[in-house]
Length: 289
Image (cartoon, rainbow, N blue to C red):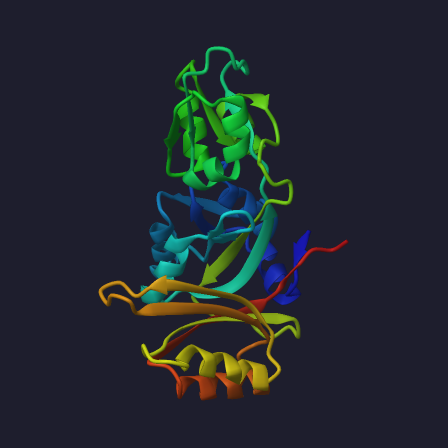
């Protein structure tokens, strides 16, 4: 697998001092996505929260950041979407990573397991499997799957749901492998930077906007993209905090902001919204057969 957009990728590989921030600790799926995107010749900067990842990019502690935004099973990662409202970080790439969960413990045995740790998304992605196999074992949420592995590595009667990289890094054994309920389980990660990416001819653009609370306002925005022949690939909404019943819409669509028809569409959209923010144009992820 590789990301389209060779110019940026080649530059990154040449820069051995490239620093990439991600939701840590080591062995999270964000860490795995970093390796898939940037390779191993980088300086990893694990952060405690998604907010910290954004701030590391904004404050130039990191050249790039990697943040999860959507899972094919559980949907959007709300914290990432919310950060774009206030952050000046730009989206400059995307990564699609296949997510496979293992149940890990120090012994690799299931008979004396007293609790299972994991991130809420991982627990949700394995909900049916856990209900069938460990219906009476308490589940405890952690900030990441890797944090769960760290905790399980300190308790002889605890287990963690995490990836195989966590097992090797934290000295755990697999009680069971590939326990996710949906085999085609992918997470989309965004690459964050301080500048957008150049046009490649196969690009995607992300924007957020707020419309007035009146009939037909969202329709008029979407109609602009329809009339320009622009394909929307994603639309999400989040409450506008501090303003009850007002929503922020996030959309992804094919094309680059510098493409003439896209530039025209964005100009027209501004006339139908209260606020609009360009989050970035970037190469679409492409998995080679």
